[in-house]
Amino acid sequence: MAGTKATARPANAGARDDVASKAAKPRKRTRRAAKRHDPVSHPKHYTSHPSGIECIQVVEHLDFCIGSAIKYLWRAGLKGAAIEDLNKARWYVDREIQRRERATRTSSTEGGKDA
Image (cartoon, rainbow, N blue to C red; front, side, top):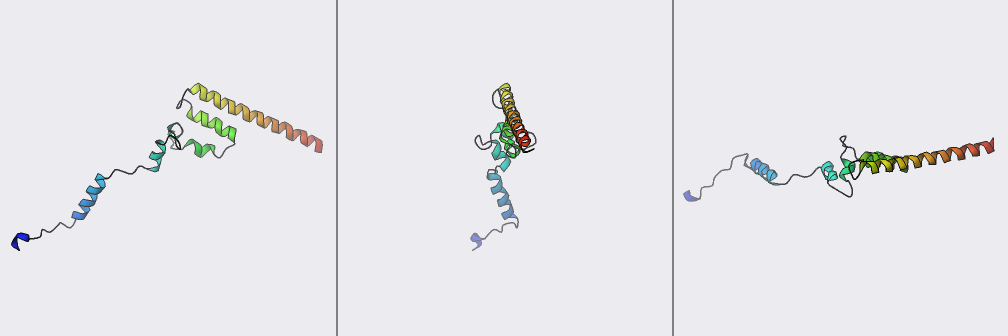
């Protein structure tokens, strides 16, 4: 039995094994990092703002035309030509102005009939 003497492991050997196994495993990507690399759900041109806020987090709370204008302003120069994105933003702003002017005319006309 002298040749089969068991060697005692240090008390912290298990801890060292855990550290080694953690080091060998690839790190999990954080949710934010995953957003930055998903071209469908979280494209870089909408997630690259220094604030860390994604464009959709803002525009989903707005009317369609205003949200679309902000979307094109947000991404101007990050996807395609900046001038094209700025013109698209202007188109949505003009459309929203026209919609609101029509609504104002309609409500003032209806108000005149009731008066």
